[in-house]
Length: 316
Ligand code: AVI
Image (cartoon, rainbow, N blue to C red):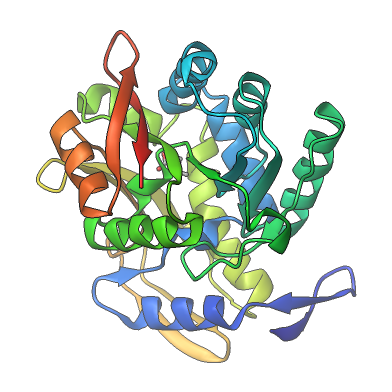
């Protein structure tokens, strides 16, 4: 970690992986920056706002499904619930209230957000040990020693698996299987393929919250990496790529721009884009195939009446 002087005069830490991904991504063709860098404090707040938008069906559909499904999951008492990418843990109380768990381990890359939601959950479930882990779960995650001997239920809601290409998704599922160990279970949310008339507005809402979320990445680069990117020269784009079954988010330059990041010069021509996110959608067979390739056996699956979103319980 390298120290950086923030506007308020306080020193903060810059993740060297962020610097490396941004410099490499801006130099690549096509230009692309991994979506995980959306989630600084501001980005995490904007994502929470996205989940409240009328157009963003995945959050409310999955929450309604969880309310229906959790009481019928049949998880044996005494498991440690390990949540990957817990964010503000809004869906967790539904799960924790329905099963008799022995500990909760939220894992998230955004440390202050993680600690705040861990505190709130501890208050909502007094007596339940909460062991937050600040980590990027795309790298090996050391689970706390306190849960080493407990059976594990992995919880990976939100269709975050869709933000990875199939290759990385399979790698991650296999890694989760290894971290959670023999006999583990996994409850995972997957967004279904559906009409672009529903998908595109979900990623390009009328209020412009998703646009602000996407553009915050450029603001973060300016803040943390000494960037001079003219953010107002970029426009948010959400595109349905039917071939790859994914929504793509891009930042499109509206005019020719030149700027520096970390002292390095970049020029982007009008119309060129920086690819910032993929959100893959899965049909029933594709979703189950992905899980099997990742070493998990799907044992039960639930969807909403429109078949827009699926919750799948798997065993290692
Ligand atoms: C976190 N992830 C599952 C969200 C998604 O739907 O792919 C991220 C997001 N990007 C724009 N809106 C929501």
